[in-house]
Amino acid sequence: MADRNPDEVALLTALITKGSENPKAIAARIGPARAYALAGSALAIAASRRFPAGSTYAEVAAYSRGLADRFPNGADLLKPTVVEAMIRSGRGEEGLLDGLNTTLVQQLLLMLPYVLMTDQELSAEEKAAFIEEAISLTDEGDE
Image (cartoon, rainbow, N blue to C red):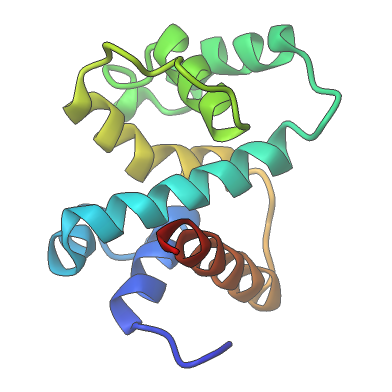
């Protein structure tokens, strides 16, 4: 991996790894603009991996409805229609987040990549590749 900002690597690691540092604390160190840009890139990658091309809206909706049962501590945030909108936005659909509470969207940006990636047991190399891809995607968006 190229020489990367350690806090950015820590944030992206926390977004996809159980037992990592709290992503909110890392995001505070990085600053909101960069932290949420990185989280958005992580969501886009995670959503496209979990729901590759050819996945249906029904699959995304069914998955979204089941999350509160899988993650009872986050059930208050994991509202199925909002989660579905976030996942579909991560896959490139536009306009689905218009009018949503910004704080809720920010919280879900820090939660959904983990939720989407937990059933994939990534090796250290795969995590490093995910992190590199997320940083590169974010940097492309900044240009």
